[in-house]
Image 1 (tube, rainbow, N blue to C red):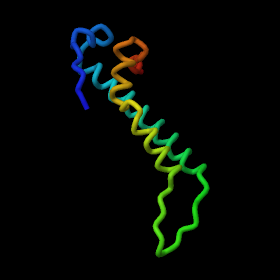
Image 2 (image 1 turned 180 degrees about the vertical axis):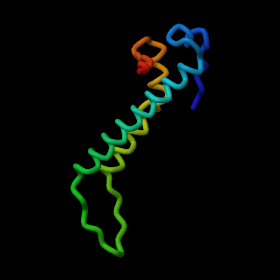
Image 3 (image 1 turned 135 degrees about the vertical axis):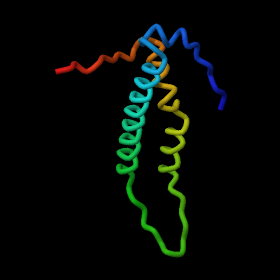
Amino acid sequence: MALKPINSGEINKYAQNVYEAVAVAARRARMINADNRLEFTTMLNTLIPQQEDEFEERDNSEQIKISLEFEKRKKPHEQALEELLSGNLKFRYKEEF
């Protein structure tokens, strides 16, 4: 997998500093990953379980198909950085009481 370099000047347009932007993108990546995990388990739970024999091994083609579909998707950190650089990722500071 090829790495795509990101200009730090681009990141500074959307956050006060690079470290802040990385922290925001990391949090968003975790959210995307959690959503993907939930979607994946939901799709797997909808499959009809097959009868398993002790001596016979079978492959579950539906499960493999779902797994391959999720492997083809962009990684969560890539999605989060794209959202940040396109200006679609909004964040704010917690208000102090």
